[in-house]
Length: 221
Image 1 (cartoon, rainbow, N blue to C red):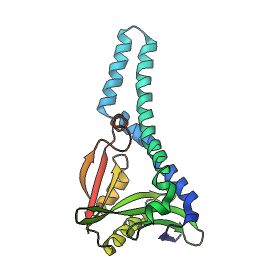
Image 2: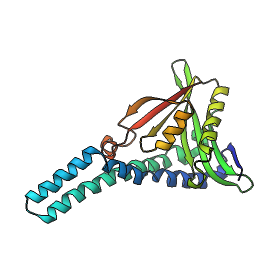
Image 3: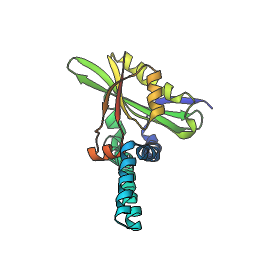
Image 4: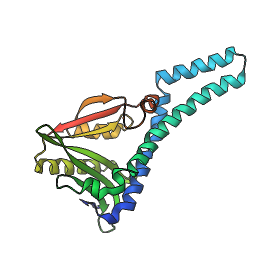
């Protein structure tokens, strides 16, 4: 089916917010499984298991590792759910004001032609650093059933074309290490990794416990 990319309209808001929340929270489970495979968490759980065994308590041998596992899941859940809540109460609460109030900012949606079904989104915001003007890509979201069909590339290319028209020197973005398909897509389109962070907008210990890195990528125009 044909997909059309167009500017956001206020009537899209409910669908866009639902898609944003649902798709962002999809990363909770992969984040948790990746974290649990890390050497650090594996070592801690084994140490707690051994400690419980030496205490002579089967209850402790089960409870202590389970409690640590629960803390890891809580961290992964909070990382993505907390991010959604933060954004729903900030820029996503007023999409027009946040992304469409200036001529060098924009917010697009992808919809099924003829049906008006919104299945994806992306935004760009103009930034200034000294004399350099560049764009920052935000809110790249695609509904699960429309992934791996080239829509991510189309949305990204839409941002790049708009940014060139506006005379930006580059486009940068941030994503997480959990989102490897997105990282692969951006690199395929010419973005390069310029920075790895272990802190974000949520408390640093949440990011650290989740064993997530924040990747900053950019593409010169």
